[in-house]
Length: 169
Image 1 (tube, rainbow, N blue to C red):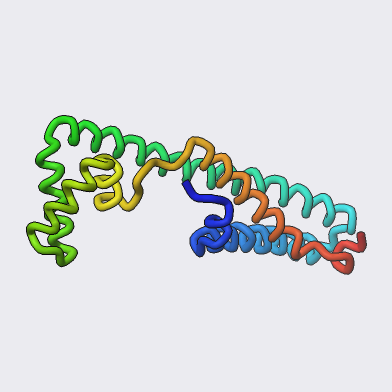
Image 2 (cartoon, rainbow, N blue to C red):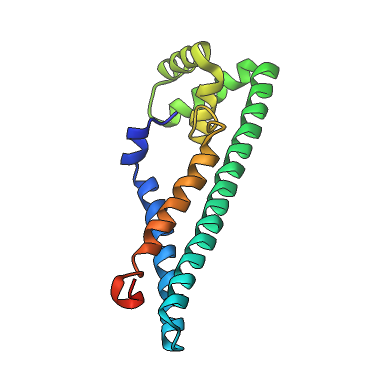
């Protein structure tokens, strides 16, 4: 599980936040420019900015939640399938792991020894890591955090186009 510090340093997390903030900027600025061009009052501009921000926050949060929840569900299915494979044919799984390490440049004996040691210490984690790139599924709370942080990033971006000169707050 990723710590908060690791998440804050993760480039993929930064990209996700930047995309959500950009959505907030573009959506809010587009609406405000359109309403301003139509001669809307300051009060209507403020209402528009608030309504657009609220709608965008919920939309972005919901989309991020759904995306991460679907990823977690897929991971849980993979874990279940791999666990069945390990129980059904542990030697076959060790052979797969051995072949993987051979393709990484290890000799047959070393690849087999590595595969056997990894299988003995954490058979499921070893299979998941080399086949799917994760060693355990995302935690149950991950979709909630992704949705909340995506919504916050959207709101931060949406604040950008709202300034005192355009709405005379």
